[in-house]
Amino acid sequence: MSKPIHRRDDVNPDEGEHKYGDVEFADPVNNKYPIDTEEHVRAAWSYINKESNAAKYTKDEVRRIKDRIKKAARKHDVEISED
Image (cartoon, rainbow, N blue to C red; front, side, top):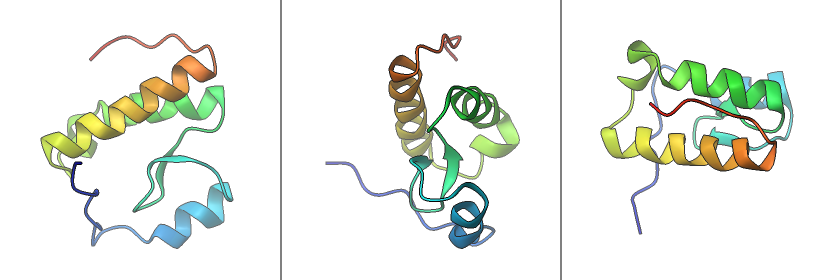
């Protein structure tokens, strides 16, 4: 079992929940990258593939976040380009 995503000091998880509601997030620890709709899946994929955003996580965490986004993309019939 992999370690949980670390709690980021630069993020308030309550803000993500306040902004998006009680939805599924690709980063559920920090409530980042909502993946509950087609639009959110596309946005999450775009954001996690920006170096400045990915740099805030370990390589393993980025992989897990991307895996969650890919799973949500399949669920919502969203085509995303691989890395």
